Length: 271
Image 1: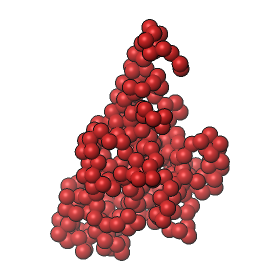
Image 2: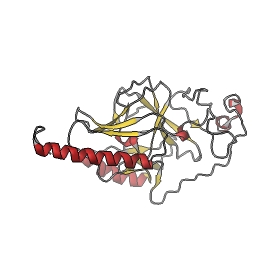
Image 3: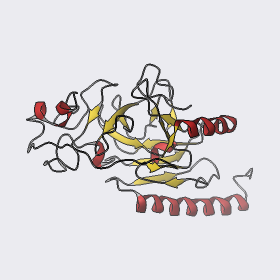
Image 4: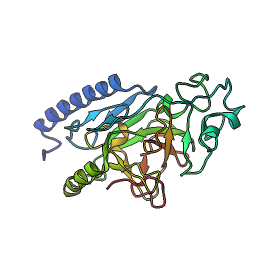
């Protein structure tokens, strides 16, 4: 809508949009299960809350998809960091992914197996990170450079800390191919292939209409976030949880970005 910022109509519309965004912010926080609050901000234009978008906190099962949530194994540890060589990652043939302060210590591309609901350890365990949610105040904001919505952090984030999951509707590869053609025509990019195993990629995450804060994170060739595949209560190798960690120290007020292309990575974004 092209209105003169000095006009009375503009001010009325701006106030109405501000009220809509405030209500949307409250709705997001009522749904969210993360410890930190979500904020919404538009100081740029008259764009209100996005239409046809539903905020969710976990994968949504698409048609014909069933996501198991009952792991067959769990550790007996009381202090998983001290006994990390006998903990869940070891049983799954990989390294313990975190330092004691819960920052990621393994290289990108390394599978991460967190403790699950069958494990004896508590929520403060060093190997329970992604499942405990986002601990940083994130703000969905209207960018001033024409990129639409973006996400910035209102807190300083140290390198290696978990930031947010990329969630959406889990669909089949065939359905992803069909939607990809539609999205390409509309200039949308929300399809995330779960191709940890190069030879087997039956599932894709579609965050176009169902998602969380990560839906609004923009692309960068020099991002401050990187992607890891994480398994918790679902141990199916084809269904990792897409988790974004700080690639470098991120300053308060800085926009969050990740590389949509991720060449050489185990997960390819966007069909």
